Amino acid sequence: MRAVLVLSLLASTALLPPPALSQGVAPAAYPAASEVASPAAMARLADRLSRLAEDGLDPRHYHVPPAELAAADPARYNAETMRAARAALTDLLLGRVASLRGRVDLRRDPSSVNVSAWMAELGTAREPAEVIERASNLPPDAPALKAELARYRALVAAGGWPRITGDTRRTLEPGSTDAARVPQLRARLAFIDAALVEGAAATNPVYDERLLAAVRQFQAQEGLETDGRVGAITWATLNIPAEAKVNQLRVALDMRRGQPPRSTERRIEVNIPHYRLQLLEGDRVVRDMAVIVGRRDRQTPMLNVRMTSVQFNPQWGVPERNAREDLLPRFRRDPAAMQARGYRMYQRIDGEVVEIDPTTIDFSGYSRTNFPYYIRQDAGDTNALGRIKFVMPNGDDIYMHDTPDRHLFSRGQRAFSSGCIRLERPMELLSEALSGTGSWDRAQVDRVLASRATRSAPLARSIPVRLHYTTVIVEGGRVVMRQDIYELDAEYARALDRAQNQRLASVDGGAARNTGTR
Image (cartoon, rainbow, N blue to C red; front, side):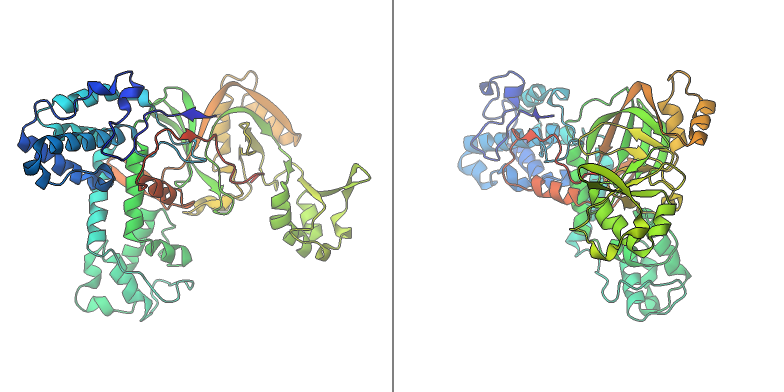
């Protein structure tokens, strides 16, 4: 899919912003300066524009004129302030970043916002700063996100939190003594519980109960396992700088601008950095479950697709990358054990694909760059896809499926797959997917699963599936942040900070980040 978002906006004060172009209104319809605002109101507008950092935007992009110009050349001051205001208003209404390569999950709908009406109001308002303020609060959850952004910006202004040094590869256990790392841990977690560093506690080398409670609170806040053990993942999370949190919140605000109305259609949404799947009907959550997503080096791509069928007892045709990188070392160690788990090896000989007994192969002669075999895994309890596969046709060969590795769902961070989505409770999703599909009741499903035969069932109604990347959500008024596991927020923040915003950029249908399953 390629969609072109109009409303081009250059960060130049010499140009009128093109929102008018998309609404069929000539640029001349926008006055060069406010028609009714007093000099004091224009000064308040300039002040509000100088505080666009509160909204996650960089005020420097809008070229707000200096206050001195108001006395030297009032007409020019008013004109330049209004041009800056229109540019800022466009970004507040529609989002500054129009599109990013591979990010088909980013949603912009210029028609959802009557830009012309906003521009007209800005030009006729006695207090145009109030128009900017209202626009800044339009995105869903904007007040909560802006409050959290202000909190983290204050932390950054104060120097942020200290980085923990030393051996962060070694796990720190509750009750242990560590004169180097425990005081640093206390200082870092004092941002959660200031009493951790009061008086003599600041240099206490014992990982005591008070510190354990703070560690668990931090782990829960970050979506980690709340076991109190400070291992490599917790150390790394502790050392994420406050500046990164600021950027995540800026991205969260911009992503929410200019969004289309919420769909009323029955649909599935998978939030990758939160490792969650939700089946929704309007605003109602019908099903909610944990998922496992692609590793950092085999990222799950963003997709807008439809689930069309379900496959029972699927076989797994192992993609070449998985075969070379994941399974070859296991075949080297114990080919008989791999055979017992249902893996079969094939080789093309004289134009025919022939099955080869893996116990007869000397795997020491093969490597990731030299592996002439194809691998397939039979259906069964040990199959990597489990007993159910949910098919949603796409060019990246991504699907959702069951898994025999149930223990992984107890982990806080669940980026373990090669790109596909593993489901915590596939039978629950199956019952929803098969709703209205002829004779496919639970008894029929159980019979097919018990038969071990591979069989497919088309859905009576295909279901939209959206794989999206949203690290910051708001639940019950509380901001919940998760790690930027694929560094897509960092990429978005760089686009947000570009001096020139190109709103005519086209949306790429999605660059493949990887292929094969998962």
